[in-house]
Image 1 (cartoon, one colour):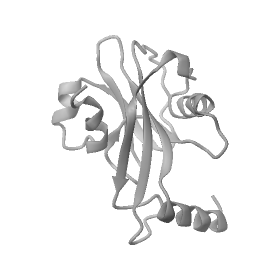
Image 2 (cartoon, rainbow, N blue to C red; image 1 turned 60 degrees about the vertical axis):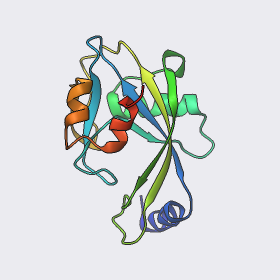
Image 3 (cartoon, helix red, strand yellow; image 1 turned 90 degrees about the vertical axis):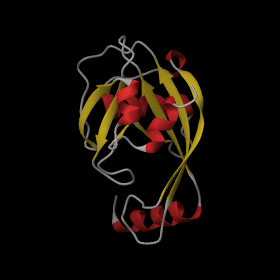
Image 4 (cartoon, rainbow, N blue to C red; image 1 turned 180 degrees about the vertical axis):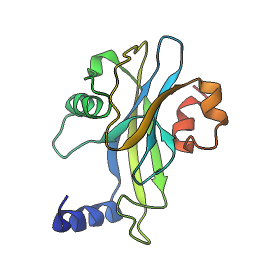
Amino acid sequence: MDKVNQEKFLKIIDATPLVSIDLIIENPCGEILLGKRLNRPAQNFWFVPGGRIKKNEKIADAMLRISLAELGHSIAIKNTSLLGAYNHIYHDNAFDEAEINTHYVVLAYKIKQFSKKDLIVDAQHSALKYWPVEELLAADNVHENTKAYFIDH
């Protein structure tokens, strides 16, 4: 993103919520796929894969794009179930600019029985790993916004 676009995007982050998709991917053993984030927000935390929906992009198209970019496999929305809508509010932003927080309205989709073993690790993550739900809920390095998907569900 060039400097002008970064400045415009930072103004958007400061002024309005962003809309995104999170993928709650469960393997046949009931474990959940998490990636260790390299960038802000939630940097250095384990988090479910996901990403922003672009302007004029349909949710189904965003699902295909995000899953391909983050996992190396396209997931069709028809193979998911909507877990719900969530608010993710972070004290920081992607550009580490002071006094600008980030607010996402997240559409969380669950994908069961996802058994692909040849997943890619994209530029946003240092690693991908399947976690038992009890372990991710107890871990200090799994972000609270990820844990929220498994509380009261």
